Image 1: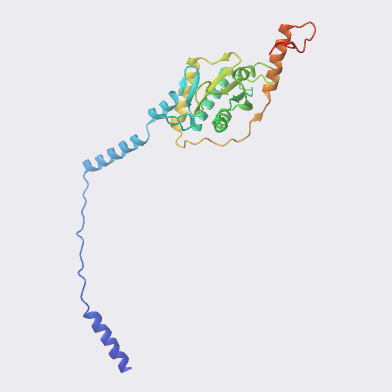
Image 2 (image 1 turned 180 degrees about the vertical axis):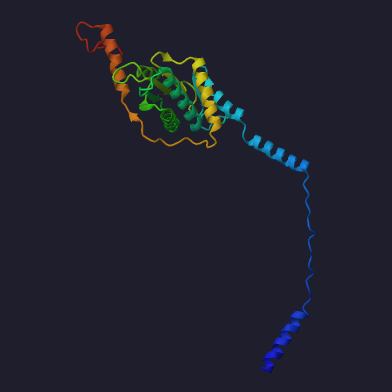
Length: 259
């Protein structure tokens, strides 16, 4: 026991005699904020927020997409000096505004408004189609997917039975590069005017600017797929047969034509 106590004394002695590490005490920092400095901080905070979000700039993103009576933009990366501006959220806002515009024009609260969508083979078409259907559905329209179609076919889908939709959209950018895409709008009266498209884009710009989550919503229900092109092709064949009115082979009016 005595030896144990002696050992503890030796250890304590060595600890006590160990060279001390000087303790550096940090000076206390005193901050006093006057009313002026607090006001300055608030202004700086607000100005920082303004830099990250500007409603007018957000609205201009949609306004710039209007190209006369169409909507056109860059849908894919690949163009030098151009960034993607025809995004799914932008398309969704425009489609929703178009759907609301059609519903307002029909002025019939009891009617279920039907709108079709056709597209060309551009590789951005599938992604942007979902945004179109989402926007139209949000507006309260029943949507129909025509798949690959032509621009005249989209208009005729509002005329020919059994479809006779209230409106139609063709997704295309015509002769422009593969990176581009766009929208053409139709009702039973024909294609929309530049003034009408401007009105739709202005409403879409307000919607787009107020949505902080710039992500296209998922479809609550799938659009109804329709094979309108077969019906449209038959319509064109019937016109040719009727106009040629061949006395011997009515159903094959072009028979015998040289290649």
